[in-house]
Amino acid sequence: MTMEKLRVGLAGCGGISGVHLSGWDNMHPDCEVVALCDIKEEALKFRGEQYKVPADQWYSDHRDMFEKADIDAVDVCTPNRVHAEISINALKAGKHVICEKPLAPTPDEIRRMIAARDEAGKILMTAQHQRFMRSSQHLKAYIDTGALGEVYYARAHFLRRRFIPGHRAKGKSFICKEYSGGGPCIDIGVHILDLALHFMGYPEPVSVSGITPCKLGKREDIRGWWGEWDRDIMDVEDFAAGFVRFKNGAALSLECSWLLNIREKEYQKITLCGTEAGAEWPQLTVHGETAGSVTDTQLTFPDDRMDGHHVELDAFADAVFDGMPSPVPPEQSLNVQRILDGLYRSYEAGREVEV
Ligand SMILES: NC(=O)c1ccc[n+]([C@@H]2O[C@H](COP(=O)([O-])OP(=O)(O)OC[C@H]3O[C@@H](n4cnc5c(N)ncnc54)[C@H](O)[C@@H]3O)[C@@H](O)[C@H]2O)c1
Image (tube, rainbow, N blue to C red; front, side, top):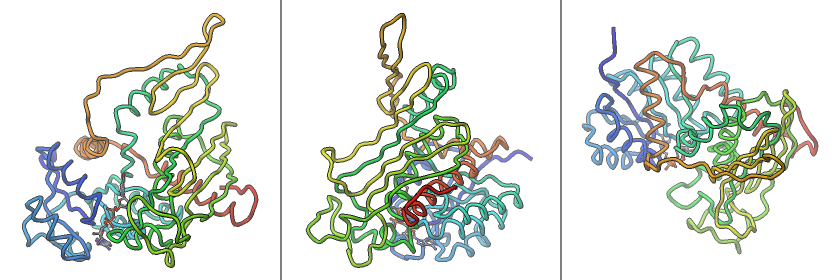
């Protein structure tokens, strides 16, 4: 029987849920968020009233929502530490799942999520919205023509000078390992690494060498431009740098930070180096050589101001309606997490480690 409407239950009514709820609200006449879940009553009330979800469909326990609400899919927007538990329970209850990044903070949790997906025969998708930004989609289409040749080296940077997501509203969610699984690696490294690997065609990682220190994050004299955080409870890195080797001989260097003494407030950049040309994201420039002259080309595309988060939800809904595979396969998110986990292990061991 063809599905006529996708009925969604959203878990975790905090910051990012606002972006997802507006996406479901604006983009999908055939999709509707019909139930909400949060352990905090005020968060449920705020989002419930904002998006007119009836109060009898507000749940404080996700298992209750899966049992009682009439839903086909679950949108997981909770802190990282409960992504696996909620997604696995949703899959077991026969629901399709889209889950915020990181899919889970450890490779083992992702393996269990993949097993639950296989058992349920439902879609499990990681919400890597940067893949769905127009700039990413245009560059990916360009790369897929083979115009860069063999991409044998990439740099992936997501660096913030003084933005640490530990201010009061976020509490422990991001700065305590128990809740987040890690610092900027898990928070923003996951975005830039996923996108770089996506551009490279997701080569298989084999080893990682890197450092994941916390040099500024516990210092009282360092300010955060998003507000104060609790230095005493912070137990994650504030910076990471690493070098990844892939089975096909390619390599990638990764840098990410919340706090780092650099000139820029924040910048994100991916550099791809191929045998025929190189390319930069998000600048969308291509660098090569023709007839003895080096060339710099600017790719352009109409700026339709589509939000990557909203396009991502659309892709998830399309996959559910059309019975297609997950637009962001969890197997790829497993590779991201194997690399990040390798970075932490490498820092501890003081040497390169296999992943
Ligand atoms: N894609 C992006 O750009 C992006 C941006 C921000 C956050 N995120 C991700 O979204 C997730 C949430 O981040 P946030 O900034 O919205 O955090 P947040 O702390 O603002 O909100 C999380 C909400 O989940 C609720 N919650 C906690 N445990 C729960 C449980 N067991 N069941 C139901 N609800 C529960 C909390 O009460 C809170 O309201 C994180 O995984 C984060 O990495 C992604």
